[in-house]
Length: 351
Image 1 (tube, rainbow, N blue to C red):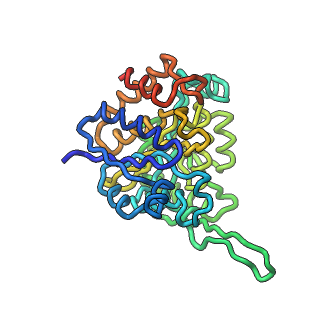
Image 2: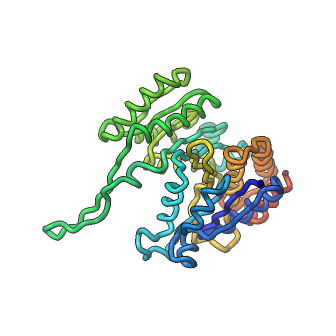
Image 3: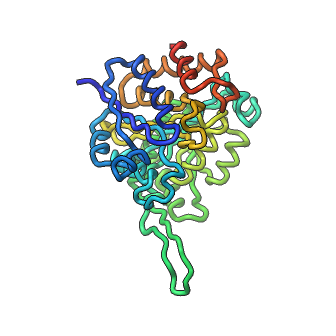
């Protein structure tokens, strides 16, 4: 049976960048069966919900899912449970992908594109492992209520269990074993009970199963500062859903552009993975051919590596991206003038 890649282009620049990733996939893996479904705001307009049950079932039956982006001002007035972002949370939960892998890799040709000095970011290679289906984004109770005196109060609940922390930590430690052997676990154990539990569970798991890997604990606010001060001190950063959301975007900017960074969301062995560029839907440039497709193309590379069993093909793709950049290929966010299609053309030529 052919392997299946499900494309969910989504909103804004999502369709533009995933179209280029599809071109690369058709070149690299011609035997791959590629399906496509509406998702996010586009699905809300067509089907009345950002994630239909049929799309979720197809995602769960595929080997890998490649997403574009969701959201935009067009759907700001939709009910919270039907906004594009709700579809993304539902997809992650429905697929059972609980570990978000976000590499922050500075390609040599882009060391001067970062807002930090070359000496700080050259050679940067960080893997952020973010817990994806727990924490404050999913905790209950949540909502906005009116108090007796007429004031309004918003409530979000941060909740973690031992099991949720252990399963994502195992992935972080296992990744570190194949990298430089160091995990930095980040939380706010000084002021949050969930942070204290996080530190205790990670420490215990490390002692039981991963004593060969170096472990350090760091408060999340200090991590944010250290990422700017000395980012190369990090190998694998392990953190929760909220702090991972923030720290991964900060780390991405160190590399030169959000348009460069892919991500993977994985779960237990045998489950399909969800892959997506970490940039947003960028509605201000949608439809203009200005978006950088490399994050989507590199997300395809992660899908090839993690879900489709094509490690050598993923290596070829990453090498082709590096060659295209070394040859001077740049979209606007990188200081160049190539269109979305032309940037993909440069990668295909390098292949």
